[in-house]
Structures are given as structure tokens and as C-alpha cells.
Image: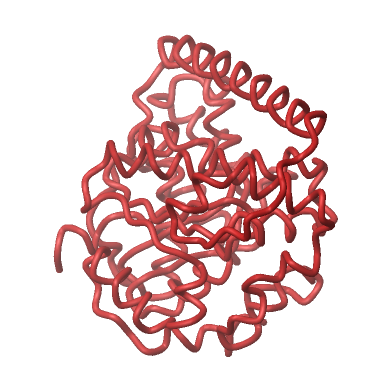
Length: 336
């Protein structure tokens, strides 16, 4: 077993970029357990001071019980024995990262797999958090044509933004990927395109597995056969994970966006689209009012991120414990 094949895997990407499809494919690998999205990782980190000094058993128990019974943590999607997970956290290393890793390791152990991963599209905004808690993690960034991602995002019932916000979200995600690619080594960060994943899934997954230090397994391209078990039909926006990989949604933006929308999105994302190998259509320059609105939002978000960075640094200085996980190495099989 290589060093890479013991490391946690974090999948990043702009929402509506195929990260759920990739999660299903990775979970179909015989050595990797990749659960449906939970909500306790970033919330636990943001509220870590509330749990106090984790050297104290009572505080570890309070954290564990919040993870397993909290109203919004989505722990139940893991189908784990909550009481057993609580005890594992209580008797584990006294760091937040260790507590969270214990949950994912329990999930991997339940599936008889030595390795775990996690994904939420919004993780692209919280990479420093993830690196602090899981310093040995490998990051996988899935990129989709920004025009398709934006047009799909606009159709989602849970998306509360407008076209400007959707375009900026994609831009922020790919900019995060670029910075990570520059800062992290090739053994820690890997980026590839959704279009390649659905057009030539075996080739794309072989490249990914080489990065992860795993052998490619053909079951990964057949993940759709089991997707109904982990992606409920009520999530209509994920129903295409129940189908074999295909390219039907590539270029769908042409039928979904009006002329002015396509003009704006392609114009403000042009350099980044070109960088990732997407062909531009030569749209007209957007109206000045549309460009001004986009740039105002971009400036507002930049200021918000800067302020959040300052708050994060202050919060780090007040931490009662280190946050890095001390649970490393392969997950032992059940019964050990």
C-alpha cells in the first residue's frame, strides 16, 4: 500500500460540475468509501470554540453527540451506529480533525474499505479549513464548462442567487483550483474536466487513480447501477447519476440561456474558459450595465472573503487545541 493510498480524498468543484457523479464513481472503487454529502465538517469547524478544550472527555462527548444527533448535520445519511461513533470519538485523539475523521473512517470500515473521501461543492471556499484538519489530504478539482455550470445552477431550486452570482461562483471555483495547482505539489492536487469524464470515463478515471495511488477498477464506470442506493430520486437534480456516463448535457447552455445571458457569461469567464480548453463562440460585448453589476458583485465578494480571512486568523489564535487529525494510515477492516 502506497502513501497516497492511505490519504483522505477531498473533491472540489463549482456546484453543478459533476462532483456527485465523481463521488459515486469513487465510492464504487473497492478501496475507497465516499459517502453522500453531510453537513457537519464545516459547521463543526466554524463552531469549534463552542466545544471547548477537547482534552476533556466531556467536551469530546458533546462534540460527538452534536455530530450524530444534530438537526442539520445529515449524519443519518451515513447509516452508522451513532452510539459506536460517539465512543470512537470520545476515546480518540483530542482534536477536531480526529473527531471528524473518525466518522468517515467508521463509514469506510462499514464498507470494508481502507480509505475515505468527502465532497461538497462549497468546499472550494474552505480549502484552508480542510488542509488544517486533514493535512495529508489529496484534493481533486473537477472543472466543467462555466457556461454549462452556470446555466444548470440557475435551474436549481436551492440556488438563491442570480446569473451574476452563478457566473462569479464558477470563476471563484476555477481560480481556487488555479491557486491550489500553483501551491500544492502534483501528489496533492489533481484537476480534470467533467467533459472528459463523461466522454471517456475509463481514460479519465485511470488518470485520477494514478494520482490517488490506486489501481483503476472497471466498477467505477458502472457506478450508475448502484446510484439509486445513495442518491435518492427526490433529488431530481442528481437523477442523471442513475444513467451511464454520457455527453448529452455538454453544451446544454446554448438552449438554456438567452442571448444577453450567454453574452455576459462568456465575456466575464472568457480567459478562464480558454485556459481550460473550452472553445469560445465569439459573443457580443455585454451591455455596460450588466458588466457593471457583475463587477460590483465581484468587488463585494472579494471584500467579504478578505474580511473572513481576517476573522479566521483571529479564530485560529484562540483555538484551545490543534485541529489537525491524528488518525492516519489505512482504515482497519471490521473487527480489528
